Length: 109
Length: 238
Length: 125
Image (cartoon, rainbow over all chains, first blue to last red; front, side, top):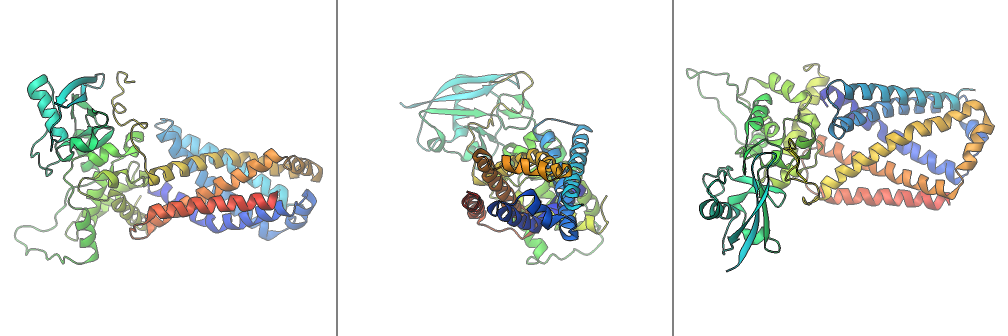
């Protein structure tokens, strides 16, 4: 962990605070109203708001998670040298790819 | 006569605990116990102490799993069921028995730029320090460190991350960051902003819990995090 | 217990050393983060079923009606809340001037996370 990774990690955490609150509200709403796929698409398809919101959330989560995992594999997994960075980039890119695919799936018609 | 069964670490890293029976006395410290063993049971026992009154920090050892000053630890407080376990400080190489090698601790102190960098000479007027300014108060709150390494031994992040400079070194760096006379601030912030610097701290606060001088390295490190973040965002750091 | 070359572990072993509330809070924060990291790829893959159309996603949503899955969802809400609230505590500790009273904050975070999970359980049931 150095100052650059720290700023990215804490910054993405701070950014996600309001995003998580909205997401929790969405989770509560979706599950208590028992929304079907059609119900969900009716709300999300073509929505610039949800597209932007969740794309941002995915980006922040990917950065935050990747850096967190990097610290854990170094401190608890004993990885040294270039290995923690490799894990960080792989996992971060994986999350970003999967996440943006999911956002596209739900938002794009 | 009541006796304590004391388990003392003997040997180097590949050593083991050995048992000794030591008379328990009123007003007895753990340092008294170790000294008794060396004088009456086994003269080959190696250990360190100096002032024996809680000023120098030389007698720090691991007592029942926690790092503390043995001269300031009464046996009545730590003996459980007549038993006591004493070992060298954790997170440092063992020289022999209860004495560990503090060189890595001091090397990290230097690496954190924990030394004062002057800007004036003896020909200049003495610089005035105003005692109640915020930086001076911050420095004063952290300045009483006597490098006993108890915090270093208590820190899990030191144990998990060999690069981590540790609470004492970073705490000292913080006092110097707040010293208006010091001219080496850029190098110091750079030193604590690299891998193993202040950002490795997870705020477990074991250091603060164990410090015999009631210092708070976690708070000092939080201060370093704020300063380095600001410097980084201003483009002053790599 | 002690092996050759194992110079750092001999005395400060996790079992014997009493851990306190702030240390446990850090551990919970790390483990909850790890759990969320493991969960996220699965979550994204499930949502990507939408690419295959409504039927595929509906099939998945029906599966989540299973009570065991609901319990897991309550657990997830709990873990997410714990991680976020613990993270807020860290952001406060690192960015505000030092304050006492962190242990009560930890208790408040734990309680709030439990309440959120319980509220989710009530609404989802």
